[in-house]
Length: 255
View 1 (cartoon, rainbow, N blue to C red):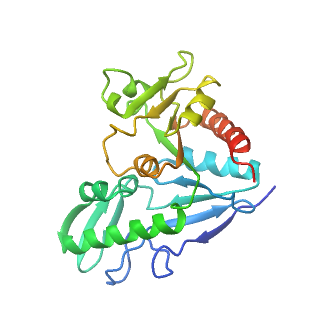
View 2: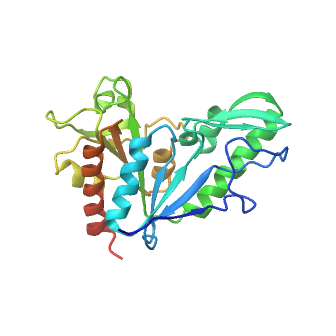
């Protein structure tokens, strides 16, 4: 069995931070670890941002073991959805999937007390550093997420539904669970995955609300983005979806 190796990412000042710094140093860093199986796949990044979505993390790591190549950028922040920062000068929190655009960061940051202007400046700096170092030159971003029984599903993107504005095209397999679906930013990915009878949503990048999510940032830069969204505990299904993305990578992103 191929062993995964783990290394901290020097997001800022060469340091990997916990979500709550132990010192009074106001410098903030993202709580990210790089987990690799073999060599990185050129121009492809896998990412897991919500620490409370464990099925997504474990299926991504399993897929990397099978592929024996590639790296996952794994956010770890005490098993919570949001990252919390606290030191002597400021206390705040944010959803890590809402910090990838300037507009998103403005609304994502929830400052509880202290120097909130400093907090916003720190978040802007660290998010831009992360993007510039690890994502700006990618050709494909593979994200892994989970939802819960009463949470997000492909039905939310159907015409007339709550998130229909974000949808350009939609493919629904009536025989599959609505909570298991792909969310993509390119026609190429949509066609490939829809032809394999998966639930797929193609983002309407002209009308989607800029909430700071990685899909919005990727579309702004014409980067191929695939989110593998599955229900919590749907291990077999999410693994099958990851296998389909591996086939997609082999077809369109040969080394």
